[in-house]
Image (cartoon, rainbow, N blue to C red; front, side):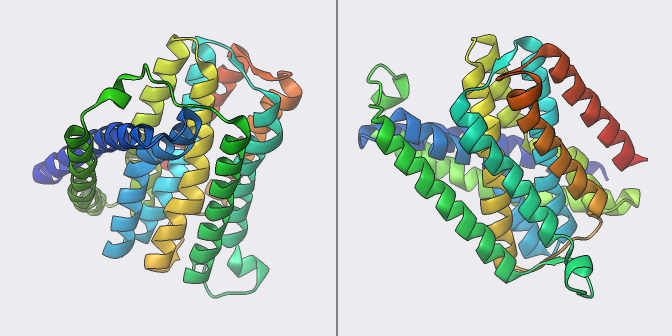
Length: 319
């Protein structure tokens, strides 16, 4: 048990360092190639902060731990909206632009609805069990490809040039390459150790891998998003904080689960309809809080409501 906890902590530390190193290195390389800050933020940074979820879910799929793979994504997305958006709004009310309300946040809701539909196959088509099939995985990857096409089209229209004053842009090429490769290696090795530790702890405690995925793993892999969003909010850049959550949630469902299900079909082991409904419900509330309730702003009161919902959901999961 103690050794499993050590593996869990070492794996998480390597994953978080690897995500940071990969993001820094890849961002520096992208800027040296003349890629705009907008594209870097919506692609490299979003990938970097979601790399822990991608690593753990794919490793879990390869290891046959479907509950951990799906629970990690569902739990992370609920954490992103309720805990990260909630804490960010508590620190400083979040202004939500019209573009986010019309384009990006609806995609977060769409990703949740698509996952909900795929998780109800026994009700919709009489299947023997709820399974995320390889076909489902390919469909999710297709959604991700469409999203990336939208991102690059939007970036091209905005014609945002990279900022030469960014320190990462002056990073030596050798250092950028070393950080990118080292970060990738740390993600892979750390993800393997993390999954081994989490699975063993779940078995020793007699709880499901889905519960571990929805709680400990989800919160742990969302630390990069939490750190990034809180830091941005403290600097008054709440738009960046919200954008980080939006990109991460879309990436988690379409790319992370798409890639994981393509590797191996994933039964919804321990992930019930209630978990998927909670994810869809908080995604809808995320959209409504900015568009209808808060009038293009997520207030401190709404932030408090998000945090309270997350606490209630964790009580429901653990109980």
